[in-house]
Image 1 (cartoon, rainbow, N blue to C red):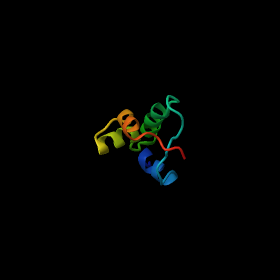
Image 2 (spheres, rainbow, N blue to C red):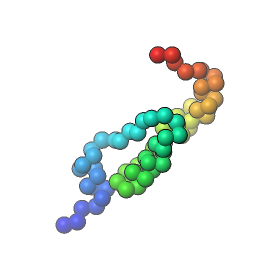
Image 3 (cartoon, helix red, strand yellow):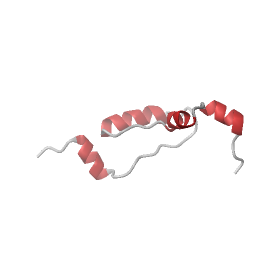
Image 4 (tube, helix red, strand yellow):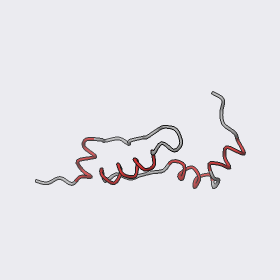
Length: 69
């Protein structure tokens, strides 16, 4: 019996995969490719936050700054 890649991925990786790192290191590129290969949903957290608060990430940092801790 052949099991779809999506079901195989769900069995092997039952939770989300989160990529972290500095800006410009390829997280989005790798994340999109990984999501496609594993047939998982790709969520860009910057885009998610921007849509949620109706502000760009740049504007958020300009208005609220960045925590020092």
